[in-house]
Length: 250
Ligand code: PGA
Image 1: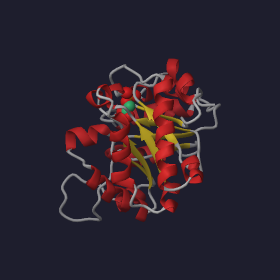
Image 2: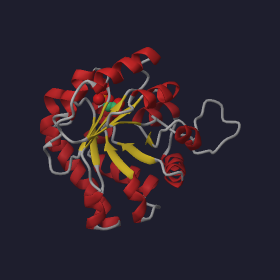
Image 3: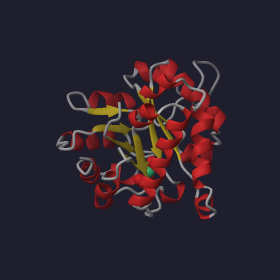
Image 4: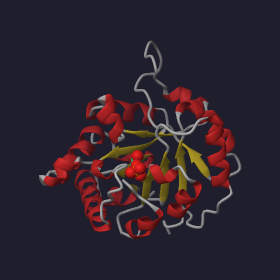
């Protein structure tokens, strides 16, 4: 079902004490928007975070997940490990994972399959680079990222997938896509889903915008028909900013 969602991508930030403190600050705020609120602390802090969010509507997600169940894969974290820590949601395909750790569409298709098979909800991230937008290839790039990693799935799988469009040129740069650029791409994504599956399915999937979303620009972006919320990086690290963004998603 299409939902309003604001997810905070904490990336490589916050130690144990800072994780507890930010969650305490978040719990002290009131979500007046009714949106789902998701945070993604580092792996080492997931258990702490799950304990700390108890009694609130804040959900805890991982930033990544292995495609493997277990074995000699140093540095990896499995679906079972996440679930045993009380985590049932993961980001997959963030542009930083793609750019710095070589995650390809094919690998992401495997990870998506593993997560869904293990009943882990996926926030699937994708988006074009600056050069691709400048040369007018952004729609093709996005269509191929989505189709390569997701279009082998049956329609039912999309009940457990949230899409996050994040133009790489807007992530952490302070440069935001305009609300119209976000809407244009989100409408294209919905049409791509409708063409492959059905209009009903396309209308049921939540599509988040990510890339330098701030309390000052969130309301305009979230007011667009096809934007269901945001995946927030830098501004998710301060309770006041994050809540300003959540409360902009009415
Ligand atoms: P940003 O990051 O909000 O700092 O641009 C977005 C993200 O990392 O997903």
